[in-house]
Image (cartoon, rainbow, N blue to C red):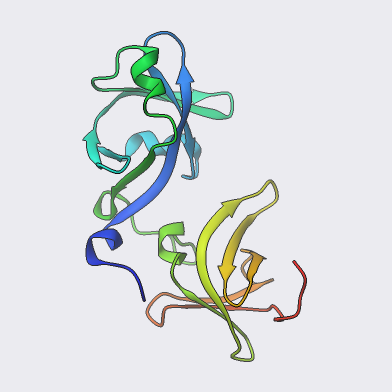
Length: 173
């Protein structure tokens, strides 16, 4: 798996604090869980660099955004101080992914190879676009490859540490 340390492997990135909601110190959350509000169910959150455990006292879907009340955050100034902080949880807090689905955290760090065996690079991050998720693959250059199983993604092999894609090295993304 390359650059993953044991402890990092045990943590899964679920989203980040995107802003302040209301006057009581609630925060807006950019969530990568599906459904979005499921992020509230996984606790405690490990926030930011310090990864201090934080309990979510209340939360809900507000339009397309998840909003949450966090323990110890009582006013908009405190909430604003959390903006941009990543939300991680212990891997063991999550259910195993359904067959044929993966957590983004499991994909980051995998090698990306073509069906013909040519290495394109490593998954550096996953991005959500309107239509579908996209793998950001860094090799001799950066490529954006849609994460569409059975179309571009032929196989995900966590044990072997690779994603096999139907993609040509000379495709312009």
